[in-house]
Amino acid sequence: MRWQPAIFAAILTAPQATVAGEPADPPAFAHAGVTAAWEAYRDRLSFGKGQTLALVDDGCKLAMPEWASVDGEIPKVLVSYDSVDGDENPQHEGKGYHGSTIGIPSSVNHAGKLGVAFNDQVAVIRALECCHCNVQDSKTLAVGLRWIIDHHQEFRITTVNLAPVDDLEHGEPVPTEIDVELRTLRELGIWVSAPAGNHAFVNGISWPACQPFTFAIGAVTPGKDTVYLDRHAKIDLLVPAGATSSSNAIACGAAMLLREAIEKTEYNWKQDGPNLPQAMLQIMQKTGAVVDDPPSKLTFRRLNVKAALDFVFQASPGTPR
Image (cartoon, rainbow, N blue to C red; front, side, top):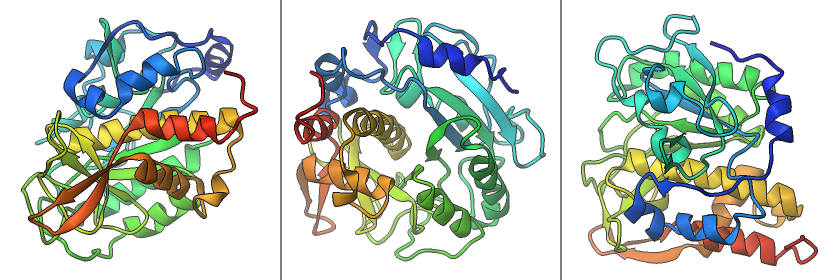
């Protein structure tokens, strides 16, 4: 499924965003500084407009009202692709179910419910049968990631939610076909993150989150900075949510807001990292809350979206306020 190119003109000329709705996950959004960011930057950011988030998972029911309706300024689903069957129909097959809802925390704008980057668009990529996967799914995942690489400029894809988990405890990366594509996406400046997993492992995290060139997102309990679910030194960032898939979705939305802030302020991100995704992660880490985790004896950083945006805007004093 593809929208006509003329839709981009509407995106770029649409009025500045306002926040008129309720958070998709009120406790998690409040804890992660999302709702505070909406309030503080309602007149300065568009909250995802002009960016597309690629949802790489096990398919989607595109007829769901959240994806089929237009409550915001633009159609929500911009394009879809099935790298398993090689067509544009991402409907669930077999055991698939997860991809229909994974975009809600990051992107929903329907019936008064808002995701973090509620004015974004999504590219729905069905890249395997079920989100509970194994490393043999790497081939079709790699094809889906290559499709993103080949089309990221056409569809303005800035961010990738790599949603599958293999539910195993990997303390080291597992070399597979996706690694070349992940490196290329990083070099292109595209944020790619994946959920760490939901089994309270302390010696490793799920594949593909354990791979180089993808950021591994863990979780804290909404409302308190207590680490739970999978944790390991590979975890790059904690986000409040009931599962690490939701944590990762919120992180993807936050990356879109931070990217917009960097572009709008012309902030010199090269002082924070060798490429834009790593620089954005560094900003999220250094502005996030410190969270100690006794079971793993590790210390992590927990996302604070408003603090990350504050850092960029305050470091760019010439930006209109």
